[in-house]
Image (cartoon, rainbow, N blue to C red; front, top):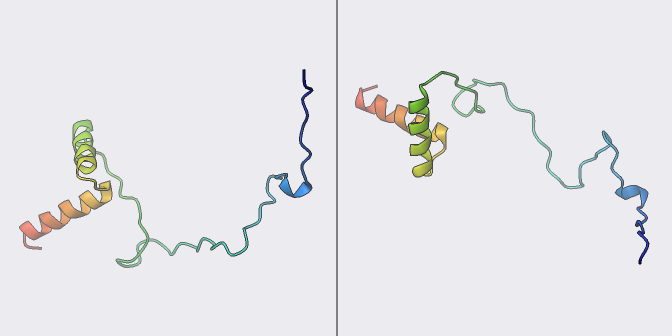
Length: 86
């Protein structure tokens, strides 16, 4: 039988919580701009409730047509505005 042998690790391979440093050359995250500043602004939540049946149909339609939920909502809103002359 062979005895269990543990590999020796160098100090540089041992992680210590809270002491992580970015890899050289890695891009950093930029601070997000305040929400709601024009059309190019970052996404913000739009919260409202719908029936379970509508939610299921909406998500199924989006998945079937390879659309993200927010893209389907945008397209539906654009079609509504176009149909109603706004």
